[in-house]
Amino acid sequence: MNFQQLRSVRETVRCGFNLTEVAAMLYTSQPGVSRQIRELEEELGVTIFARAGKRLTGLTAPGQALLPIVERLLQEADNLRQAGKEFVSRLEGGLSIAATHSQARYALPHAVRDFRTLFPQVTLNLHQGSPKQVAEMLLTGEADIGIATEALANYPQLVTLPCYRWTHSIVVPLGHALLRGEAPLTLERLAEHPIITYDQGYTGRSHIDDAFEKEGLRPNVVITAMDADVIKTYVELGMGVGIVASIAVDSERDRHLHAIDARHLFEINVTRLAVRRGNWLRGYAYSFIETFAPSLNRQLVEEALNDEIVTV
Image (cartoon, rainbow, N blue to C red; front, side):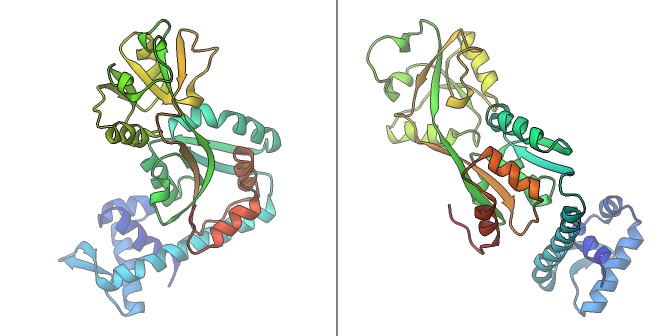
């Protein structure tokens, strides 16, 4: 048994059983991939893949049972390499962070700046995507650390830890009707205006929808976007009332807008940090986590990674 055989099995599943794609991923030939799989099956004494002629069509029952073991073996092999690098070069290397736009734009900059001061020889790779894409980047190993508000806690393969709590704000042009009349603002008054807010699955959108639904209201959402800056741009054009994360409101940059605190309207949101369960983290990765979320020290994160089940 060798790691090339294990990689051939894993990539075959990831590539939808297309051996041409697997060969390209592993920089080898299609017959070479077939040989690696066949030799592993012969050694184990089971058939891993179902076949239609020479074409692989899926996993057999033994294959389904063996795949998680293959994944763990390959991950531990990668952890072993990372551990060696940790002792050879403690202050050099790379760190990949996957985050939603709101986190990358508003929450991460100060942490990135401070981390770069502490570890100038570490290259930071920042990836942006939806919460689901952030989770997928963690699961495939493309990212070491993921940061998002939605979705991450839904993946049992990930260890998720709460970083900070935040609320939404309403943004309107100066002189808007919502700035006059009764206070505090109600959902009923808000629902009278066209609304511009986040796409489904982004930045606490589920809490926005839940609040209106509980009151039996159907808001007129006219524009959605994943980017608070885009939302504010269209609010400034007078196309609707914006609902954005409070951290996305900057009094200096948003001089033509007025922000209304909406914490009494919508449920508080929790931004979470996630890493793949069982993944090896370099020492400076723990430093980055603590720089971003001071409550998440190395001991706490290591304990969470070593737990079989983590509930936060």
